[in-house]
Image (cartoon, rainbow, N blue to C red; front, side, top):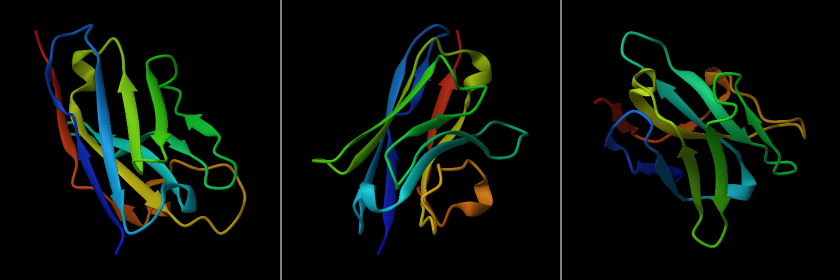
Length: 127
């Protein structure tokens, strides 16, 4: 059974950095397209970044470009999200997710496309 488990969230001051982890089981990361999403207070879940199953290329939302870096470690079957220069608006629950792409197209950040989700990890940015 496909399972995803996020970790690494916590409280950080503005300007700080965090690296979130997502441990995968029941599948190898290379077999599915995977991504990171977040849900800020009072907002809907929004995509941050993803890695395509087909060729491993990455895609970032406009809001994430420059401060977010997605990566995967095949040996550990773990997905990572590095966040730099954190700001209060980054406060949210962060989720990793995966979906079985039926094409070789670049991954997408449409929430409805994703089949599997982790439980989320809380990131709070406050001074």
